[in-house]
Image (tube, rainbow, N blue to C red; front, side, top):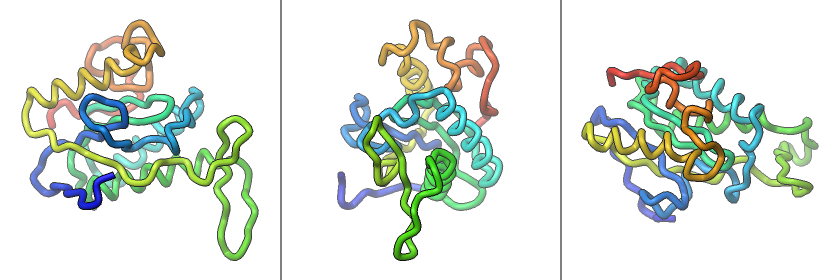
Length: 187
């Protein structure tokens, strides 16, 4: 993990969140804790999508593209009217982890535990810390990031055709299926 991560905000660029193992970045970003498939169920992915829409409305940013995978998320978003992309990602992660928390947890020393599970193992958190983003400043880069996101479920063997993975912006661009999140084509 880079110690001196430099983020460039305020330019009006789109921001693309990268994930571990992608050809774009060697670093884990916006990934579930230890890359466990904590978003592996339709219920979990639906919770994420509803949270994305709520956070989009709250902070006033454009969603240009997204895909929710079982263990990570890719977003292509504009800069928010309130806060920064870091604020948006923090709020989104917090909202999703609260919804996904199982049980009430046990209060101890003023701290609340966050009992997430992967199989029988209790996990200390839902998300990897931090996230990494890439400023998208050209139409060609935008197209490339959207294609990468939309191909991701096919590449990972989750579906044969991108149209079959409903937790992405593919349906908005292809006109096939019902979009789950409002996409801003004009950004």
